[in-house]
Amino acid sequence: MTLDTAWALALYAFVTSISPGPSNLMLLASGVNFGFARTLPQVFGIMAGFTVLLLAIGLGLGAALSAVPALVPVLKGFGAIWLLHLAWRIAGARALGEAGAADARPLRFIEAAAFQWVNPKAWIVALATVSLYADAGRPIAAALAVAGLFALVNLPSVSVWALFGTALKRLLTDPVRLRAFNIAAAVALVATLWPLLR
Image (cartoon, rainbow, N blue to C red; front, top):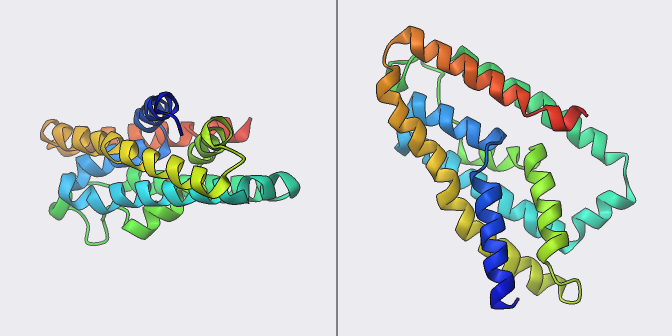
C-alpha cells in the first residue's frame, strides 16, 4: 500500500467510523447510562468485531456472499432482530449506572464484536473498504494492511461516542430526562434499519 493510499484509507476509516450508525448510537447510550469505563469492553468489541469482519471479507467472504446471494436476506433478518432487541434494552433502561436495575449492563466485549456481523453499516463499510483499498493481487497482505490501519483509526473514533455519552451523563441525572434520552436513542437506533429494509 502506497503512502497516498494509506492516507486516503485512514481518512475514509475516520469518516465511516465516527459517523452515526448502530454501534455508535449504542456507545452513546451506554456512555450515558454506565459511564466510559464500563463501556470500554463494548468499544473494544466493536473494533475487534469489525476488524475480523473486514479481514474475512478481504480474504474471500465477500466473494462467497456474492456466490450465494440467498444468505444476504438471512443476515439482514438477524441484523434487524438483534438491532430491535438492543433498541428495546436501551429504551427500557431507567436509571444511571449502579443505581439502575440489577440486570442493566452495557454490552459485553463478545456481544459488541458479534453485533458487527449483523450490523448493516458494518457490512456496507467493510465491503466498500475492501473493494476500494485492497490489492486483489495480494489478498492476504492487503487484507491485513487494510484491517490493521482501519482498526487503528476505528478505536479512537468510536471511543468519542462513549466519551460524549459520559459527558451527557451529568445533564441526565433527572430520571425523566434520562428516560426521554433512552427512548430517543432507541428510536434513532431503529431508524438505522432503514437502509436494511429498502
